[in-house]
Image (cartoon, rainbow, N blue to C red; front, side, top):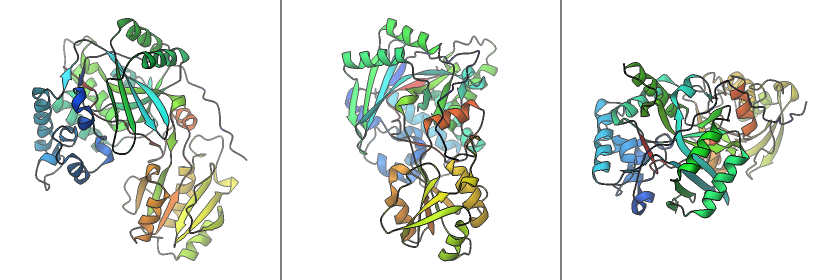
Length: 430
């Protein structure tokens, strides 16, 4: 059976999405590029130390505050979270972060490979998260949730926006397009990775009110990237509600920072796998095992990229291979069973490599497609890994269908680029 992409059939809720304007904390134009940083979870502490070295403005001093403490410190110690608060307060005192005078919405656009996507920056609702108006497609880990919850509690702010998507709406698209054409961006720079970042402030109340009204017609929004930050922000907000006997629903803790992109502007790129060993098998033995469920074609030493769903690329022993999944390995009518990550896990990782828990196994690692096939080759050729697999990317249609049907994607399925820069605007819970 040939898989046919389905049209998005958005599930309607009785409740509709809430978008809220807010008084953003933002850097002066002169230091915006220096202050904006990559998200906390895309680089480790050592990489953050190097990236922030010589740059006192970098938001990494707040979102990864261990870089300002001894290297041997426990990254989850009270001292680290307290350092985040100290640094945040100092940024405000220095005038590196200033609160807008009124509540605004913002537009954040990103350019990669000549393509620009436009997101609306505003606050999402904690209640929407609790009521499943904001839909998820990944499981979260309690330890990672608690880490970000502690950070939100101690700073009393959402330092980093989460990455949401929503069903595209022509009226909203027109408002955003017209505003961008008629107004100069507040921030406009290219980051070191070559991606463009463009940021506008919407101050006109009529435009703000119109966008908020249009969002009330949107049945659901979807977490594209940042499930742990979303959960942490919502859970802290819910916690504050429970502890406030005079709760009204209008307090800032009822809302959290998000950038909302229309679904038709986004592209998911591949999220690949590398494995340390072949579970005792030789290269030839491993290939023979794979032939049970895949049609294998050797491609030589030139990198081979998967060309369609259910086609995989494998790098083993200095050679690239095409692996075509046989039809009985997937179910076109099962939102999870049709995914290539499911096929790879069910017919390669579990039976032949004895990797049963992708979240905890130390024998597998995951490589975002932004690093390219050469990164997979490098890690195998170095001897660090024994085999690499490249996958065809999941589509936005698949992601939304899975979220709408209440299913959960397997771990490490989606990779979005470009990543949002943190620090262009911050939401205070005060």
